[in-house]
Length: 466
Image (cartoon, rainbow, N blue to C red):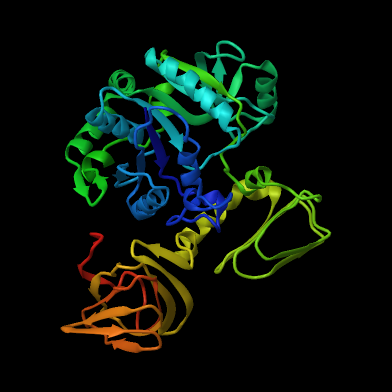
């Protein structure tokens, strides 16, 4: 059985923690591991598992690879989507690739950003689903509802409290309808998790969505290896409709069964659901970081960088990061994405990037900026190098704080240690490398008429970025 982890979402409803270039699945919202890592760790103990397949966007590829490496997971398959096309094309690609690696494997399809508390119940549901998948069924996991919920789609089962044929997939209901679903006992929340043989999925797609299957087959046939990644052929993949597997197949087939899952599941789709997942104190508050509360109840308060104090409020969410603060009524947290939309429309970087930006070589933190200057703290991993590059509009001053820096500037190579500095004039080819055994920390001061990240001309790059 091959775990297939879908990791293409942007998690805009958890802004400002979750942003386009580092969305919620790559954040450690619960404990020391990220949600992506927890998705894989909760599979420990399941027999006969192959290395995972991860389908993700191009811009997240190095985070995926690093977080897999931190878990010691070897030989993963990482498939890069050139554009987002929802779950139907992504799963089609995963099934086609799986057929190339094994003799008709079973695929266990998981989202990278769910919480599942009861691992024993989860493993038991997987065992049940595996038996159904072996019979040739398309299996979906239906979450046993704990309350009427208008934020989820539902699955109508033919029978109650047991594995049964899927009768219908239902859109998100209004409250009265949701209440009737829960009361009936044969409706489940749609988890977006599946299990099936690769051959079963592909045969059903041939019947119900052949155009997606053909485009995906072409995109994979013309894919190119890129370091440890599979880079799909863009034009063929773009030809796919942007459509979920529910719409493309599951609502049409008569070959689907639902396995009930009662395992403390949550899709962490909003700040209020994150509050529900965390351990609450005696006032029903959840706090993270440097937080001071007085006369506050039923609230979630998160501090990343500064002291956050809240007085005399209830049912609020307060989230502080290095470059943004979000305050919301808990009832309105589903609407955070409208703020993100407005930030995008205004061209604000806060919609996509954190102040701390991760790169395959390390990270940089934009400490300060103003007219014609910007200050960054840069950390380079041992043995890593930035690209050989130049800038048309800025010069750079580098001061080594700790570690050792090898600096190439045109034809000159210099070795710098703690408290030493160098100057990179505008227009000069240059490169920063860490030849040491500890992270290299430098302070970079940029000065010039334009300081955007797109003013980089790369001549050579270990990570094959343009």
